[in-house]
Length: 288
Image 1 (cartoon, rainbow, N blue to C red):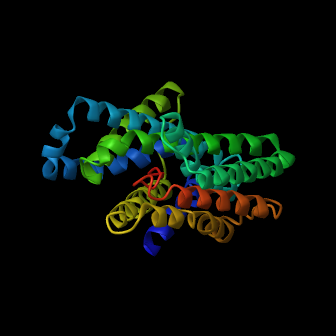
Image 2 (tube, rainbow, N blue to C red; image 1 turned 60 degrees about the horizontal axis):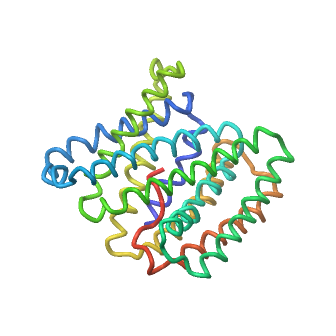
């Protein structure tokens, strides 16, 4: 699990250092993952793809659309505010997953509600600090929160399908859907998706192989033998991990005033995750 935490912690710093537009990065991250997982899904899990059924396919396509929106919101945020703020706010996915579950009629324990309040207070404090710095930073915070919401929607839509098919089959279809939608967005907005130098292509490949495949694939496999609560809490280590990498590699130090807000936010998320343990078998995290 330590390898997975280290891998996902590199995502935001890698994106921040990649010389390509946000939508292009999101497209290539999903397109490259599809190119690697697609053949495996077709050759080894073809029977699962057939067994999805119409409802399963529609849910998976919907999840892929939410994944595209997840990437299309939080990745642009990295050019507006710090890696620490973005990763912390995107990590609110379990909070939004709990609220979505409540809207669908599920019971949310009192402890989880307490965690939601803490997380909202932490997010509000963090956004207040960023707004004091610049309006751009606040916009980055809002995009990061939106990324967390769409990530929660992605996990919620796919929960039913993931109980019936392998992670490889499910993620291959999701990544393909996300890549197709992001390609349309790139073309519609006139964003170039090619002509990069060697360094940029290597960064895109590292982003796909590290955070997208090694990080999230390992986490998904660990879920077979470890509780979703433990995995979700391990995911929170991405925040300090990404912050340290960004500080050392990019020289990006978050304002000192953001530290208490981030700690309050992470404490709230941890309370939500542990408060919902036993109510949900999923980690409430996207493959972002």
